[in-house]
Image (cartoon, rainbow, N blue to C red; front, side, top):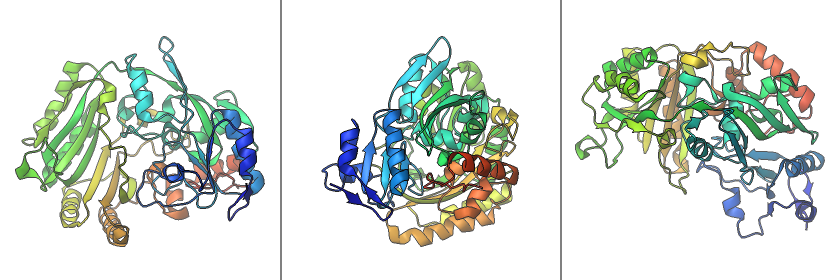
Length: 459
C-alpha cells in the first residue's frame, strides 16, 4: 500500500517492513488519536504518523521525507500553538516512544530522550532530589521547549533550559546522527539552543541537574488593582534569584479553593516557586502575601515536581495569544490590562506577566541563539474560548491589549509565537543572531526540510 500526499509518495508498506515502531495511516483505528495535538483548533490529516523506537528509525523517517518531498512534522509533546506537530497530507514524526532516561545522580547529569514530557523527566529527577528547569506545564515535551529556550519555574535561579543543556544527539536533514556539544559541531550546538527545530531532529539531550530537594511554591491569588499588580511585579523583580513568579491577571475561575463570592472578580492568579531553604522561602513570599488579603493562599513547602498543576488528559483548548518582552509596566499599563480583561467575552482572558532576570540575565546575549537575556519582563495576552468561529473576535482582543500596553519593544520568545509569519519570527532573533542562524541552516538543512516550525530559511 502506498499513500500519496500533496508533497510526494510515501511507501507505507516499506516503512512497516523497515521499522519496529508504529506506522499509523488513516485506515488504522488509532489514527484520529495519533494525529491529535494539544491545541483544540488544529485539525489536520497527515498521510502517516510514525513513532520510531530509536535514533536510527528517526533517521529513516527523515530520509524518507527528504527523498519523497513530503512535508515533515516533528512532534515531541504536541503543544505547539500553531500546530507544528502535525502535517496536512505529510509525515508526522512522533517521538513519543523515545522515553529513555538515564540519571547520573552523583554526577548531576541526565541523558533524556525527547519523547519524554517535562513532567515525566521532573518526576524521575525529583526522586533523587534533583531538577532541570523546563516550563510551567508538565505535559509539554522536552524536545520543543528545550530547542526554543525554556523559561519556567527555575529560570531566575538556574537560567533557561538551554543553559543546562550540555550535549545533544541530532538527526540532520541528510539522515546523519550527530553528537553535538561545545567541542563537537559547536555551531550547531549554538543554534539548537534557542533556534527551534530548524536544524534537525533532537533524539536525546544531556542535561545538567541541580539540587532541588524541595521548594516553597504553589498558588497565591490576590485581588487585582493597578497598585497591587505593579507592586507584585516590583516585588518579583526585587526578590532573591531563588524565587520565580508567573502572575496571571484574569477573572477568578470557579475553583473549589476560591470562595464563591470571588468567582469572576479580577485577580492575580500567581504561580510561584522558591528553590531553596524552606525558612528563606517563607520569608521571600511574605511580601507578596502582604500586598492584599489573599483570595487563596496555597503556597507551601513541597517537592519540586508538585509545582506542575494537574492537567486533564483530554483537555484541548482553543486559544489565541501574543507574547513579547518588555521593560515597562506601570500603574497605567496595569489599569489598561484590567479594563481589557474585564471587557473580554472569552471563557478565559489573561495577561500573564513573568519577571525575568537572575541567572538567565547573566548569560551573554551571544552565547546561545536565544538573544533576549536582558529583558525584564515577558508578557502574554491570551484568550481561551469554546468555538472556532469566535477566533477573529478574541484575536482582535489579544492584539488590541498587546498594542495598548506596547508589547513590541523588546522582541519575542520563539516558543510562544503563534502564526505570526516572518515578522514575528524576526522579532525573536536580532539581526546578528538571525544571520548566523541562516548560515548554519544553509550548512545543515540547505533544502529547508525542517520548515514546519517558526522557520529560519537557509541563507
